[in-house]
Length: 496
Image 1: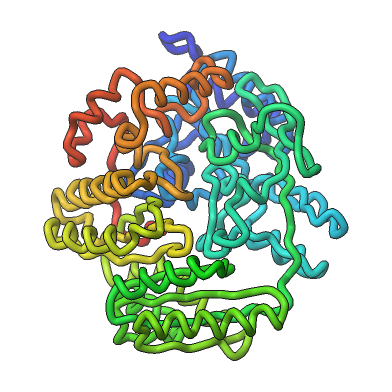
Image 2: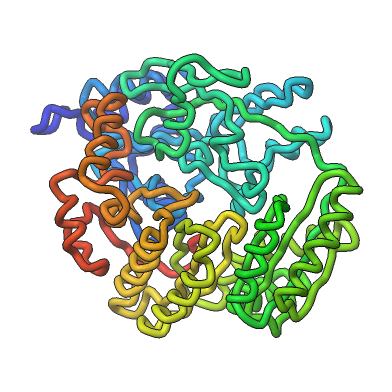
């Protein structure tokens, strides 16, 4: 049957999809759909009209053609580990899960490339490439679960992105299905491609421009040696100054991470990594390369940290010790879930020179809102990940937390940064888009969107604020969500 709008109802749509997709993977009942209601930011929830899990390219194309014919919204979904509500369903739309596209299609050790389906886990790429002495550079904290398709959607980074770049710097080409169901290939395996750099446009586009069905990425040789310098500091200011000193000396670490006292204690209790519990701030600085290069830089970094007032300095003496130090950092997000019923993981980027100022302002806001903040972030490239600790069972506390998060993002813009480094905009940061971009710039976003998706059915309501609301967003206090087209379902637990 057709609804009054002329679109197929749930049952009719399920029958249409079941003609070419195994009916077991056409999910129309609410109980089975429940796991798809949100991504890793579980405070933002919506139930979809229907969920489909195709397993061939032709099936994806057919889904897109049917949805285009009837103007049905489509939300492409990977592993659901995202933290901006970018994969939250549309209540009148289809969730297109790429979970069954999980094959590594080819690894070329000579060209140092891997050709992958979007459902391949980030860590699985490096595991498969290890036999050739290669690995994949970008390593988000969720790499054990997140998929390369989701990494493309959000332009994910990770602890090693300081030296080796974000997803956009490591993805060579994609196969993409357009909103009309047409297959197109962007980029190439060469060093450059003719025409506009559409790879840079698609990477980080959050499912607004097409559905990625295959990705070719660049692989890197495993370094001859890697060591970590771990340093504790009595103040966040001193740790921030130490970060600046290392970068100013022309040293580019593989990773340079900072954790504050809340994160240190949570991670140490979780991972037993040997972190100094008397420190107010902790730096983890990894140097990699040839043995001679690493030995030289390790000594210099140790000196810089001591000169900046480090209270403790320790260098990893074995691969196991290095892995243990990183285990604490990689486990920090879930570890914080042990010290608070809920937490809200933010994501903003600032100039390194503004690190101490922003962290100091954040501490003042923390006192103002009466909410603790645990800071775990990529200090080397200024990508902040404040974790605001709260209890969703306390009425009004999530709204207060959301307002606090909005203030942090606006502060990032104020000091010359931006509202996201790798998590994306999604639903979460849509109000702050108008703090960073003016009406003309947002209009340009809409023109780009229209070029790929004229009817606006790909992941609608995400990423770009509606033009007529731009001035409304600017005039609203951060705590006002009245014009945000979303449903809040507060739920306790770990949101990482």
